[in-house]
Length: 240
Image (tube, rainbow, N blue to C red; front, top):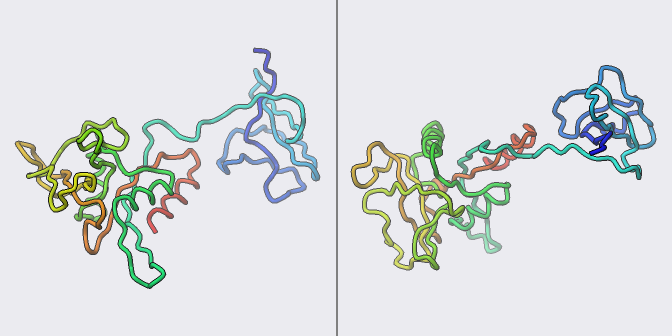
């Protein structure tokens, strides 16, 4: 395609250094040339890779007008997902009344962290049980399933999973008879209906209330970034 140069994430932006220290934007170590790159202490410099010569970088002004192609690294890997159980936070209202958050609040809290309520499918159920047991969480936890009023069925938010390991007597519209208010929680020690073996199943809970008086939990799935620091920051924030 006639491409001779391509931008990389290597630059000298950090700490306004005058010695021309080049680092990658992500902060993660990557390939760098053996010899130091020349740097202008006043202007910001970026490094472009010579196409066809992976050992050769050229330093160019980051704000230059020359058209240079770029090498983009996708921020997320397929099937690389972190599952994080966390307590649904409580917030004080202006009148001082403590409000316990519900399924919708948990859903929004998860989205705020760049994830979504967990969708159980395939080996995810095994991963979920392992995580909850490791953390000694035996109370129900919100997951990404609720009642779809248009289809009159329970559906996963992603619309893909076929996981339907209901607990005995489920799905039930009790204690709330209004179908639109029905959401789903996972119980690691629950007994599935029918001839299912083992433990771990899902049951209906009213969306507008917390599902346990002392442990208000949900499970958030977050795609794992290639930036480990970003992942750790996100996990720490979710687990607060």
